[in-house]
Length: 576
Ligand code: C2E
Ligand code: CA
Ligand code: CA
Image (cartoon, rainbow, N blue to C red; front, top):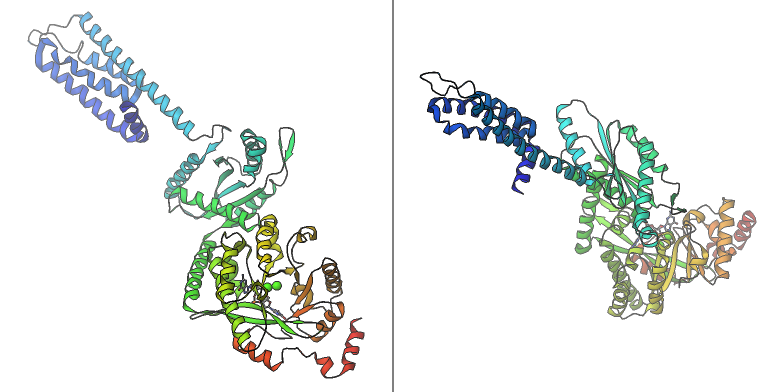
């Protein structure tokens, strides 16, 4: 063990150890020569020659040991007389015998040290290999980065490097259905495709059982972007395994850097994090991190820190935007929308901070705050004689919170309200990520009497067959179809079809983003149930909303009815 450790240390500092050893061996050879010469015919100190021989054998192996043994044997052989006074030479067989013994020691120690050294080399090589596939592993990539750092220090000029990580996100599924060996086979095929497209000489590393990585060195920024894009495309084809074609759900992450200033693992971890983020976002299958994206992450973290503070310091407010019933004009519903007035930056729109909060644990607190404040205002409205059902936007991440249903029930109880006072809106796209999980939680919420609605309907890829399984009673047609209804024929067809289909499936329909009278009339005639938009009112602070509601006497007055009946017929004829 100790010998192995010693040899490991020697191997790690090979050059310097060898240089020092040569000097020590020469010094010892000369010292022993003079020692033997000066102590006369006994040759007692000839044993001291073992020292340089053993050192040479350990450091330089068998060849070094034998060479030192021969030189040592000769030095204290024919060149040293038996008697200095008479210059009587040693008997030849004496010094030959001694030299032979030295050589034997050199061979034995040298061979042993060679064997241990070979073993260390094999172990080191194996430590950098993935056993199942024979590909280089994480440690090998770390070593390549460490080497790159040394090269960088000696080279001038600025280049960019990029670690690209390919992540097989359905690896677990593959293992559980087809076994571990299938995963290895797919990983090998991935590495083959990788090698074909990557620049010549690029090594492919298996850094985790389900992740491959490569280091693209010394490239220009644009070249890196091009290469990463190319790598992404090669994984779209299925993989052949056990006579089956298997789909690999692959996400790519890249970390660009121009100089290695941190430990190698830092850069690998960033690339892995980017690949995992590509999987979570599902917007793009490839995410490249650069210095700029680091700044974005820092800004994100700062914003989330400020948002946390805003939650506790009262910088967040809920505003209310009315939804009117289209056949009667009754104002019985309002959507609660969050407003953040940052003390330094000013107004920050929800689209800027909600998606960021959704990627953090803060979304739990934020939604609880939105529901709590909205219900508090419902109670205030009631006290002022206004009966309003409030719709709060929730995120799909909330459904994953184990205590979410309990939390909603507690908040209703806190304000002495039943589920009938609350509506929860969820976007269509987010629901599709885990529809089965959503069904379970939404059913429990529906049991509390809460109305559930699908927001931004029409923007996603949801199948109505799936939507039907959800305990949802309202569809909100996205404003992108409603905004220019007056002029856009295609949108008219979409809205008409959505309303008809929704009604056949027993959903009520809300059209959001109504900005002009023509649209309102069109929607009313198309049989839409509710409308929401700037034409009716923007989202207002609770007090202003009460005032607006009271001055409207709880009913939106359609101007064409109030002003001139002929306006409606004029508009209708224009629309038809
Ligand atoms: P959303 O749920 O689709 O809300 C409707 C958005 O459209 C609101 O923007 C509203 O002010 C705006 N809007 C309403 N009528 C019109 C119109 O006639 N024309 C136009 N151009 N826009 C109209 P806002 O308040 O900026 O909210 C944006 C998004 O942020 C919301 O979209 C919702 O997804 C999210 N959000 C807002 N508040 C909350 C909240 O408390 N929790 C969660 N999870 N998300 C929220
Ligand atoms: Ca909404
Ligand atoms: Ca919406």
